[in-house]
Length: 374
Image: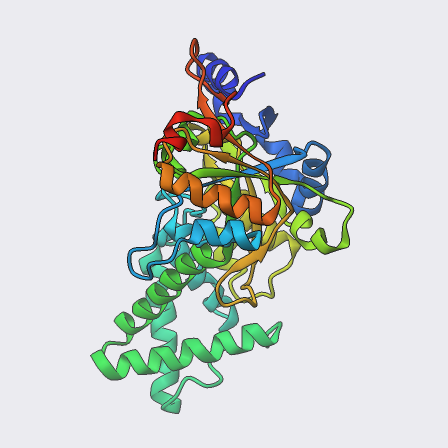
């Protein structure tokens, strides 16, 4: 079933289906089943239905500040740029929703546990916070420092450093404002801000489509049909592409978002494991609104930083280049020249005369009057 038809069926369905199902690689799947898969199983299942070809649309425009055409560079070097989700056109792309009051609550409860302070689940944030601050203030008055305030032995080196950081930050803020309660509040607010930033910047991402004929993709990502689209052939059994293949996943399109504030707040000081990674994938890096399902996107995710400073990663071989229908003749000549130099097949894309669809052009680019007359 085409993505357009699938979306139409979802919108006509009951609210229950719309809320409990998602679209992955053109298929309608129960969201809870996907969540239970975990990172390894989701990756394995995804590879069973992975397309043999992936496509990336390029604008073929110069960077205004650097006067560099990154699109042509990608074609020449057979690399893809790993972008930050913060730069994507969807303002909520890869964003995990963290609710501040809940984050504050669970951090206060966690710190109370480390101080062996009993808390009541029915207590408000204000009540828990007051109890915690009074304990800290009493300790500070007696010792003139906060070292040793956490009676619970840290479970890891990360937790030990977290305790130390909390104490140092609190003392620094108290020195600025002379209000212990506000100092603790500021420190937790900073933890929240840093975690939100981390959720957005943990991954660098390269996005791929499954067709070179999407009018919407040509309009949005190929400079209103003036750019070009590159076809990459997936090679799963070649050692050279092993890392790239292993880190490719389909996007999960759905209508719902799950609040995982408690999970993030309580695992903040733990070493990241596969479960943590899957939560970032499932709720963030691979999660998008159903409104974008027409893209049927696959993503290359590289977490926790990349060694290359320019974030350009070698990708699968380029096996064809599609030239935009409205690409200016001079730009068309440039791309054709690169293709010939790299021995890459190329073809023009044009409108279907009877449908709102794009298709391969029957005329060789060099024989096209628009090309010859310029």
